View (cartoon, rainbow, N blue to C red):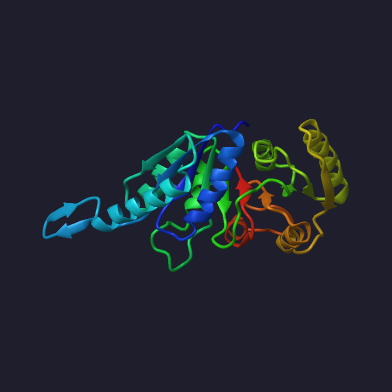
Length: 266
């Protein structure tokens, strides 16, 4: 995959700056255009029987987010702006998902906190599942101005894993150290898959340190978190599976708890 057009979701959340930093870094590295896509939940103003949209609250949020985006990307030659101009949960999710199909990558924040009413909590998962494009989910906390130099790749020989592995290549250019975590029903199967993935990565100039586990491995998500910490990974590459290994690991948990940006695809 070649990155020529990157979108970054914008809203009133404080995490928007971190998203811009990551998206800008990727766009500058690839020579891609960067577009801010604003969308968040909001109610129309109603006075008597007269309903007005967009509300003042929504307009103010759009203007503040656009100003932030403009300041952060002032030194970039190719940027754009799109407002989905919707306020209901279903419409915000639908429009952002639809718009994501027009680019190479959509950058979104982690699922919103319970107290954050502006962003639909299912946005990241819905865009991943239905846009047909790779999605980069950026944590709320931390600074992630550059990703893809030390990726942790989770592989379980599934369609989703194959899709995101291919899509990750554009982010892994110049990768200095990749770690491959192969999960399968048996260790032997994990090793066989691992050899093929290593060969595939080598064809793209990427060397990977590998680790293989069978279904008896306990605490897969804890294993992933441990490897992120021990390798200093700056990117988690994982397919949008309902499970990523054994035992069952909810994709919701991956999106909500990952301490580093997650590149995923369905």
